[in-house]
Length: 167
Image 1 (cartoon, rainbow, N blue to C red):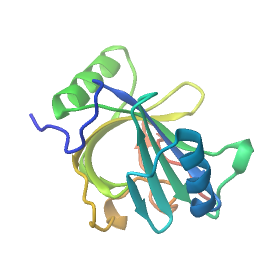
Image 2 (cartoon, helix red, strand yellow):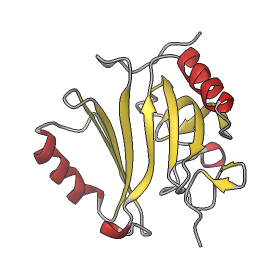
Image 3 (tube, rainbow, N blue to C red):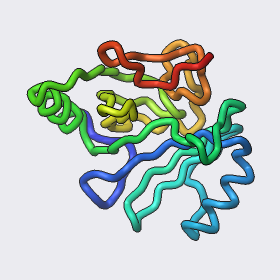
């Protein structure tokens, strides 16, 4: 069993990834909203890890950001171990849902194990553990599943995309 490289107080926390038109402007907004500095900031990317409420918010600059019509890249549940990712996958599959597994994927400037699922309305969810936070690591576009930053790369769950299909 591999443990998370990122530490947080709860057993799980919600992850939301938003596609934004200007990451600097959005960073200022979320600094004010959460009264916190980003825990990671790269060109075109910022992450806020908030203790209360327990939240991991990524903002990813994208020319395809849709604003209030649809700012969502994807949703997620961050967990603390690969065993929990596997348990969630088995539970979802037992319930009849189709999943997609990604092991040691370089996503959002971190190495992660994850399972993807699409809800009945097409919302993409991931359950993931961060294995290496790669603070200076470079994302690998051939193994990347952050849809707002790599529009030409998309994984699928069954026949449904787990990342935004880009025109």
